[in-house]
Image (cartoon, rainbow, N blue to C red; front, side, top):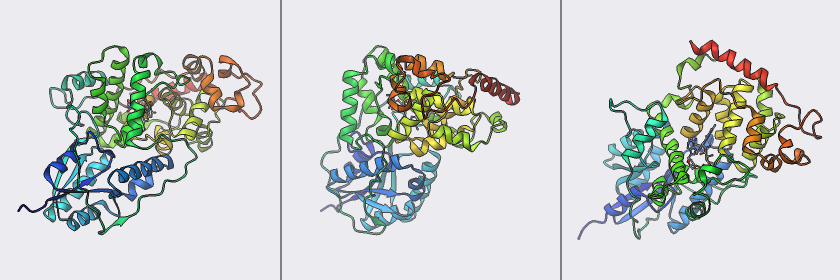
Length: 450
Ligand code: FAD
């Protein structure tokens, strides 16, 4: 009679049961599987309320689908995982590989601790269609520019979704480090439903209604026709390979553009993996000397959507209300912070990490660096977004601004982008003169250009 084998699946940013290569590997190698999640204090503390709430909901959903047997552990991940693996006599701990600076260091520590106790470590798959580190130039170095990376990424291709793992005998756990599922904090924000089924429903609706014209509508916050997959992708409620497989060989500008956007996510993960310090330091070293300002009051006005620039304020208020902001707005408000207020991109990135439900250190911090001009593929520094013309162009009827800035609802049509001198009651005057700040931004840039 063969001895029953058990394995641990340590869920991290892969909170789903379908298209899950690590789960499949565990199910194929073992008779029983213990599913665990570690409530890692150092990550939990850094996550803002929307992300915590979304994570707590996703864990509750996953636990339900494991017949209530998801083991939530607390404490140091190395101790918690070693403790659980030994308690159930697991031969191997299975994970999806992580590539962030924190994730790689943590995994090295945990796998070494497991090895000391004779427990194996198997990393299968990742949160990406192509794992960071795979796409390299002919000379073996990482890409620093998006377009050639995306060409190589498409040429490399990706595997089809993983097969279904079939029925799994989930182990019940009553060992060390066990804790309860986290409470879902109330956030006052309207978050997406945090379940794998909701991710798939949302994706289906996007495929059926919005994909074909994605390239035309993706820049229009008033229309709101993007996929809203970002939070689901971030915590792995759906895998990008599932999306790419559904796109299949659909041709046309909509599907092509969507593939390109998914590729940006993969590119930034790759850049961060190759250059871990770029999470919080400027990728371009010249930027270490940039003469930023240090004005907390101006920062607070930006954070609360009280700059007096309607499109900027609308974006910042959407962020607070939904834990999400349309992509065009992320660029506009980021440009305003670094080029009109001359405040460090890291301040803005930190604020986004606090409030975004899809906060992702690679996409966020490199999105900020792109806008600031300090990152890969930097938007040329002299291209300073004009917050009024950006509003007029991407919210042509002013509907987006009126949705988020109630003080301006009395202004019809595009007039909402330029409320004039007579400000509606309660709405502030513009906090800066954009043209003057633009010149100042360029002058500062000249100082570091070398
Ligand atoms: P769609 O337009 O439907 O795009 C589909 C998917 O492609 C997205 O879900 C996302 O995974 C990926 N994607 C699209 N654009 C980008 C991009 N520029 N960079 C990387 N991936 C992209 N995205 C995050 O997921 N998390 C963040 O924390 C984040 N912070 C950002 C900060 C700034 C300053 C900027 C300029 C961009 C940031 N982005 C971030 C990228 C982008 O704004 C969001 O991915 C997008 O708005 C999410 O909405 P969606 O799912 O409807 O996007």
